[in-house]
Amino acid sequence: MYFLKKFPKWMIVALSLGAMNSAFAANMKQANTHKSDVKGASSQKGQAKNTTAEVAQFNVGVKKDKMEFDVDTLTAKPGQKVVIKFTNSMSKDMGLKHNLVIVKPGTEAEVAMAGLTATEAKNYVPEKNPNVIKATKLLASDESESIEFTAPTTPGEYPFICTYPGHYVTMKGKLVIK
Picture 1 (cartoon, helix red, strand yellow):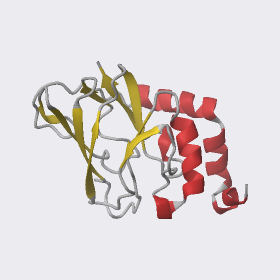
Picture 2 (spheres, one colour):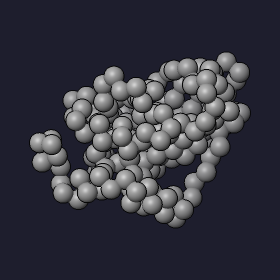
Picture 3 (cartoon, one colour):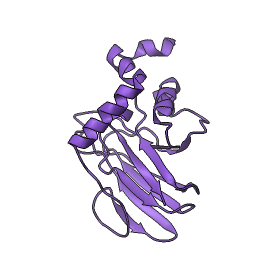
Picture 4 (cartoon, helix red, strand yellow):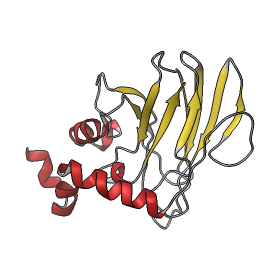
């Protein structure tokens, strides 16, 4: 576990204590309630620009100077084409990089931990991990990237997280397939 020596002790502890991370994230979410069920057309940040039977399009950003996505729920149909434009809208003063990684249900912690071994050069996204559905690259402030993929055919809640070390605890949302 040589790679862990590169990270501050507090970050290693936070990442390794999955149950505490979940409780912390739940408390943060309760304290900062921000629900945005994305259905139909909308021009609000983090909501669908145009959701049709053919394509579900979403804009997702980062809450101003907070380690949270600005939307916590996206909705698409099984097998629907999905386009997500992710923008790291955090101020340049903060200097934090972020990504958006969609994973299979219940695999957030495993993918985040595996991302540590992937390093920044690989965007903290584990290569060829079967639990990763789609991911953006690591983005600096004011950078954007769009990802396109076909929504899973199995209904459920598919988490999206930031896999930069320590961020997945508070930077999470869900893609609801129904």
